[in-house]
Amino acid sequence: MKIKAIITGATGMVGEGVLYECLNHPDVESVLVVNRRTINMDHTKLKEIIHNDFYDFRSIEDQLKGYNACFFCLGTTSVGKKKEVYKKITFDITKALADVLFKLNPDATFCYISGSGTDSSEKGKLMWARVKGRTENYILNLGFRQAFAFRPAIIQPTKGLKNTLTPYKILSPFLPLVRTIFPKYICSLKEIGIAMINSVTKGYDKNVLEVEDIKILAHK
Image 1 (cartoon, one colour):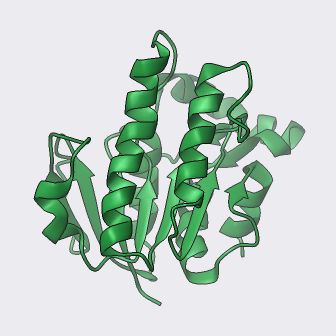
Image 2 (cartoon, rainbow, N blue to C red; image 1 turned 90 degrees about the horizontal axis):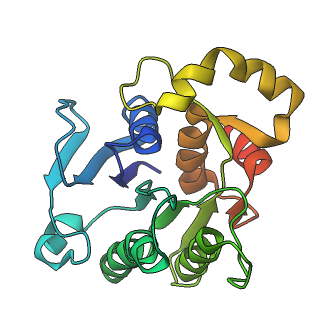
């Protein structure tokens, strides 16, 4: 199976890393990135749509047809945000795109970047974990052929990419040691990208992927 993927969040660290793996993977035929601002990149596999309203994708529906994967990497920190603001960015945007893609491409695989500690019960004490849990549950139950929630914790960045977050730039030299000591809490950005690609072509026996699952699927 050749993958035709839609990627969101390509201007962020995770989305950029997933895009990098897709552009360099033989199983990926084409990639459409949907952004608010351009990534300024030319590649034979790559197409970009600049779209300002991420709460309404109806105006670009015709350009979203025919894709068999979505790697949803858009996200934000909950720090300093009230629940309604965080919910609007995290849940509402994800739902808006997922609803359109399910209508157009129900046989697609939808991969959602969540996070370690997400609360699937939606009843825990941490606001961000409840909102992430609600978002996961919505995606996993929408009806796509396959849907997966990826829950990375510490991410080892890919060298040479421009959107690596500052804390990771500082900690990068120490992350191989951290991975050796605490392997259950760290995976690489490369492994996340490869695992998403493999989820489309090979599937996985769990819908919610913790760090160890991400690494297993990446090397499947």
